[in-house]
Length: 568
Figure 1: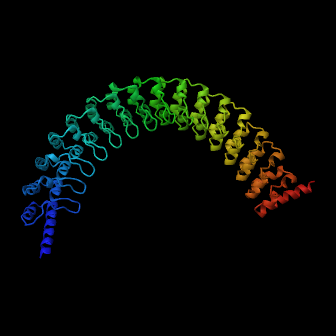
Figure 2 (figure 1 turned 180 degrees about the horizontal axis):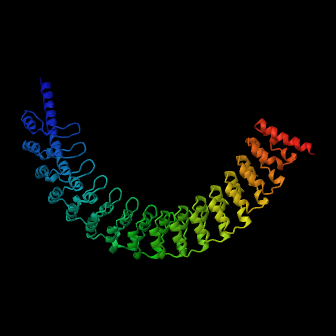
């Protein structure tokens, strides 16, 4: 019988919880009259009927539960997350319920849940100004007002992050010191930083009026960003203007985790308005400060294609400063040329740069090389007008020139422009570190028009240059089956020896064509060769006839050998 009573009591308690969750005030009233009912009964997550009722905002049920005579400790029971009925009423903005609970348990108003959150934090975050007002009137000290949760968030941070200006005013009026106002959370953010990020200008104005010191304004978050970095990053011009009376060289010079100043950030993002306001406060040295990677604000602006930023920065810089290289050896001009930004290239070239500065090289070459490689014809044209033939023909660390890069990538018009710029025969036939010339690249890739243009400037000696593997333009063209290019090359008065040049492995153009089954190319080559040439052996002691892949090709080669033998 005793077990039945216990079982019945447990069922009744569960019914009470269900009735509260269903907002069934009548059933709750009936159940509260059942003998043995436990009005402070807890679910498996430690929710009591009062906690549920406060969370759901059912004033009538809360009144019924409180009328039973719950003790303060029961009213302030915490669930598994440490939440009390008061906290949840504050969180949800149930003002009338909060009033009832507050009147009975004011000494518990600064209790913290499992995550360190207080009723004040919850109300501040959710914008429940009347509840915040009551909590502050309940005697909280400035230290309690500035309580932080496990993430380091305070009530003031919450209000600033959500833009609740009335609550911010109340919290500031609660006697917070400038140190407390400038408290940092686990991400090292302050209330001021949250307001800046969200763009709440009036809240920023309120916080600054509290007398933050220059040192406090220099506080950095986990990414080492200051209030200036954040304002510039989000393009908060009006907010930035509030900081003008507080600007100091120390604040201006602070760098974030990437080594960027606030000016770097604005230049990268393209925020012209902020930069225009900021520049009069900067020295030339500050305008030209380098980031961790060696980039200046000008380099960032050119890199990211912000023409208007480049325009307003250039008058503050000397040609030497405009041509500063970053850690990779890139200049603003290199970035603009490499990204195909003609307008910025024009601006930089009109800034009285010397031809040497125009032709600065990084590991991969000069601005001209970058533009030639990528096919930016108009930029190539601009750059060529500022360079001498000698500068046009310079090589990068791999020995490549602008002409080689353009020929390799098939930019016919650019090749034509570079050739017309007065290059010497030596420059046109220049070899890279692998011994490859512009002609070889074009022949290998089947660029007939480019091959024809180059041949107009070259003698048979340059046409037959061999790379470090012993390959000539003719061998490369024959190997790839570029018949029309083979014809062009053969029409340059090559000697039979040049036509029959061998690679490091003894391979000839004829062997390459025989191996790859290019019958027409074999027919083009054979009339230029003697039987000795045709019978040349590779490193495996094989001739073109030996390695021919089809009977038809074997017959063609044998027929030519027979013909030559007959004519002796």
